[in-house]
Image 1: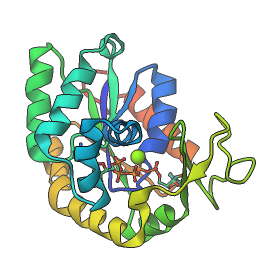
Image 2: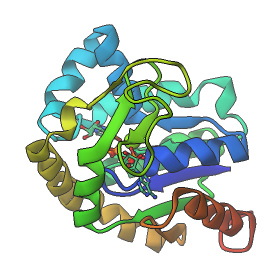
Image 3: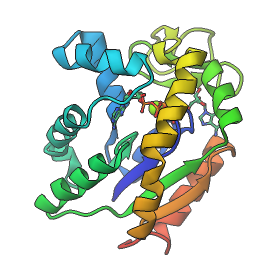
Length: 220
Ligand code: AP5
Ligand code: MG
């Protein structure tokens, strides 16, 4: 299946993407994770992306499209993919359509995770991420077994640089202005599926799985 997870910062895209990619056996592609890995490794792409990310702005479309096009060429995308945090602008969504058409592919569904802003701000304040593998935790709702240590790889848990309150508010503004219009874009194409992202994590995963395996996704 070829899927997109759409939602505000902190809506739970990364959390759901981990579960869905396991269940569907498709790669989880997060442009944010790719940028953060490049920042950690100190690459040229990472250096360019960091100034935008730390300010709560979007990385320019051309830079983002180049990493997505490269990633789609990898063998593991032949049977599908799950984008998390991409596309984030109308030009990115249009470019994605062109790239997929060139590969004789089209999207099956766009999953929108709906979460009100006040819940988002609470979630971001408690989020911790593994410095090594990037896995997400929340100090109250999804704590690690041992405080400050990743359950999966034993790495240290840290606060993401862009989770400071003023940056979160800027990211939410950027989302409303640049990314929210994608809801209409994909509604017009009859691809959009809405889910309540405030429910329990596994319950949301189950609802999404039931829906995309059933009748509500195009071409399934
Ligand atoms: P990105 O990494 O994509 O960040 P984001 O969209 O801001 O979203 P987050 O990762 O913060 O949240 P999420 O929805 O994944 O939620 P999570 O599962 O972690 O992008 C970062 C930056 O990179 C952007 O600001 C931009 O600068 C740049 N960028 C990336 N892609 C780009 C693109 N395409 N174009 C241009 N620039 C781009 O959950 C959040 C917290 O809530 C966690 O603590 C989690 O444990 C908890 N939680 C999740 N679900 C639940 C639940 N159901 N109940 C209770 N707690 C929950
Ligand atoms: Mg994420």
